[in-house]
Amino acid sequence: MKYPSILFLFLNAFMAATVVYGEDWPVWGKDGTRNMVSTETGLTLEFDPGKMLEDEVVDMKTTQNVKWVAKLGSQAYGNVTIGEGKVLVGTNNESTRDPKKQGDRGVVICLDEKTGAFDWQLVIPKLGAGKVSDWEYIGVCSSPAIENGRAYVVTNRCEVVCLDLFGFKNGNDGPYTDEELYVRPKGSLDSLNLKLDADIIWRYDMRDELGVFPHNVTSSSALIVEDRLFVATSNGVDWSHTNIPSPLSPSWIALDKNTGELIGEDGSGASEHALHAAWSSLTYGKIDGQELLFWGGTDGFLYAYPNKTEQDEEGFDLFLPLWKVDCNEPTYRKDKEGRKIPYATPPGPSELIATPVLYQGKIYGSIGQDPEHGDGVGRLSCINAKTGEVIWKNTDIGRTISTPSIADGLIYQAEYAGILHCLDAETGEVYWTYDSYSRIWGSTLLVDGKVLLGNEDGDLLIFDHGKEKPEPKTINLGAPIYSSPVVANQTLYVATQTHLYAIGK
Image (cartoon, rainbow, N blue to C red; front, side, top):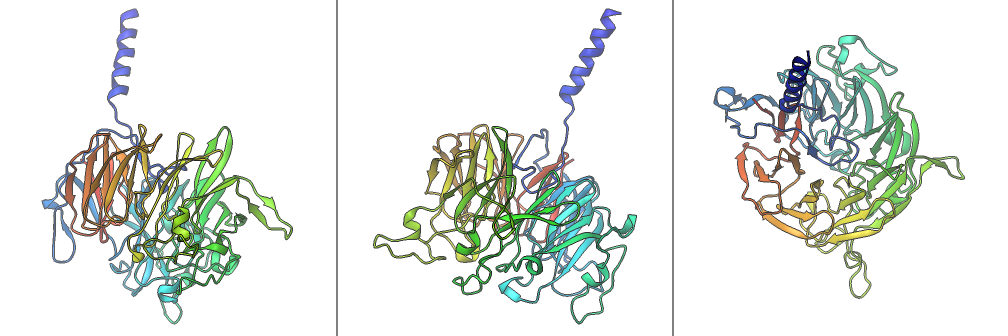
């Protein structure tokens, strides 16, 4: 009896060692740390995206190691999330799936994870404010968050909506039941399609409820912490970049994820000093047992908050900062004569758009501006997450909207100018840089000993992870890549402006 038992244990151990386990990617950055590092191994990174036919459909016969390809709109900035058998991605309405809903809209598409088959879509009317608050044809820039049969989305209308992950297949769940009115822009006769449209469970309008003035677009990816949902509001300046229409409106808020009720709001006062818009998403982690939230401010400061509210004299429930750090150099804000340096000029100050990343008790944040503003000075900061002490900083990294990735003591930070930097996460020592000679909007992904990054030329760059400068492998997907690659359940997802590729055997 002894030998069969030993053999059984050996076989179990062997099978456990050889089975590759997958995992969902349900929120932007995979989890609360926002560190885009996957533990999956054995992925297929050798692939051919195939040839495009005249009707913008990929000829699957010409692809290699591509499971499926889904047509998006004409612009896709929102990053893909995957959970509970569904794939969600934000885009616009230029590839209309419902003939009765034509024209410029924001869209969130839900696809079947295995086949890429279309499931349902949230079609969002525009605000009608043009480039000021809801830029034409930009669509939905936020990544949906997926949890327990629900999806949480920040829309182009500056709303937070909770959606039924399975659409209307299980009825019209409430308390929100006015989807018929929601999908109908003013002056139109659009009707609800129970087979195609999304089922909204609850809806919170940040413009109506909080007086928020979103600048250009609304962009924030929800963070879920137990029963709380944290989102940035995109509150910011007006078209002149000098006036702040709603200086007292919060830069971020917390909602009850079950009901959509307001729990609390940012108490930093950052909106009063907004340089542009509150676009950076929140980060979460426990430091020495204390729950902390981190946020990259629209004023150029990186903030840390305890995950609890305090009531002010007027009865508002506020999250008050534990510490804040200016991520700009003093010389970015004022010149040698003490004069204020104008915003959106190459030597001027920047906000944080990239999401801060929490790694081994440190928070990493990088400054940047709307790509429309071009290149300029930047800074990557490594900060003690508990105390706010700046451990090191690098000012050779230019403006960026890319979130860094960190693993094995190495941090990878891309900048908008097209350069990828590899640094020591502890000391800030630079190991290597690589110039892709193309604009970079998205963020790096670390997986299976590789670093993946897309650029505006449509190249997916694949680097070896390590201190030695690698020569990347390049695969061109035929259209600009403005989002970030992600991995879920042994599949690599790469979204161009027009198509989403699911890559794997």
